Image 1 (cartoon, rainbow, N blue to C red):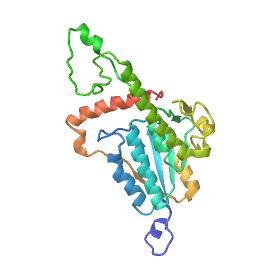
Image 2: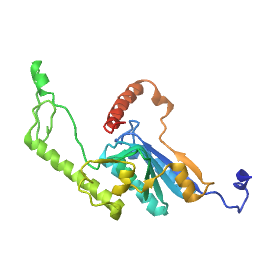
Image 3: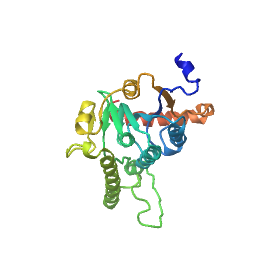
Image 4: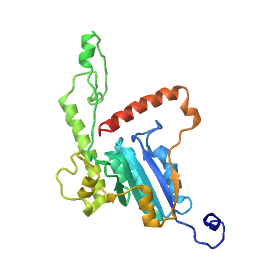
Length: 268
């Protein structure tokens, strides 16, 4: 009888919530991770198809590109405001760094008791190989026009002015991150000097800091908000079949190693 009501005119339909999975490292391009390019059609469809009562984000991301995080988050907020649709975020293992940027795009954030949240900071990492080249008798030859063109070249000794320039860039990106979190979470945030130091919090601790709103999982929370008959329409990135073969396999293997390294930073 419940299924028949969907086809009978003038009967009230059960509310539908669009569920969008955001899982993986955030990076530009089409490497199997999260990017605005890959997610744009899914986000647009989630907000537009069938007039959803809400959009739910399932987030499991250790972060990644600040720009891609901002683009994805801005797209979610634009559509939510244009269509007056509430957005709820549900954190699985981790929503850290850029992953938390995405969570902050929601109106309410729910976590598991063991979810890792926070890491509001910016990181840049690399290697220096100039001594290795020297030991093997290899001379590196680089010619540039512009004194800063070879900044942070990993095959030459680190320069103090390059490090200072990099820190200035990281501080600006960090300031943008802080502004985003403050704009989205507002007075919910507690006054904690460690809030924006890159510190992380677990479950209830994140609630106490005002970074999230409560403990809760997707289905129970949505049933509580929209009734026991709420319907879920799920969206997620799917790779075409041809990408699973040939050279793409090697690329995916490398991407998988990089992704595991990012999650490993949070003990996952």
